Length: 125
Image (cartoon, rainbow, N blue to C red; front, side):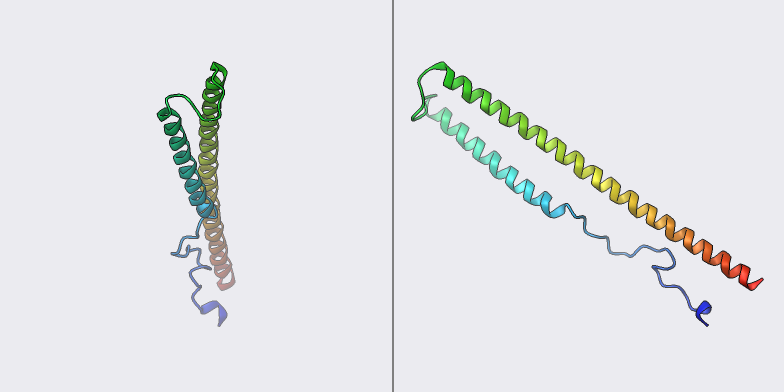
């Protein structure tokens, strides 16, 4: 009588209605929070430097210190842009791979159900 029972939704190749949580969602929020905090600190420090009239406490008075500050800030901004773009592309790739894996799993389930039906037909004939 095992052959006459109806298959469960998982056996029939139907995906469960609840979507699994992606593994990188937690780190993505943490990364976004750290990014927002670092950008706020950068803006505050630049505003403080500009409000001081270009004269920083305990800084040398020559032009090299201003050049070093500009180069350092530009390097930080470019590094931040590179980090953002790399992480966003990696997250998109991971999401795409997860979708492909889900589709492959559904395809395999459908093939398995098809083979079961063919086996039942061959048994009945």
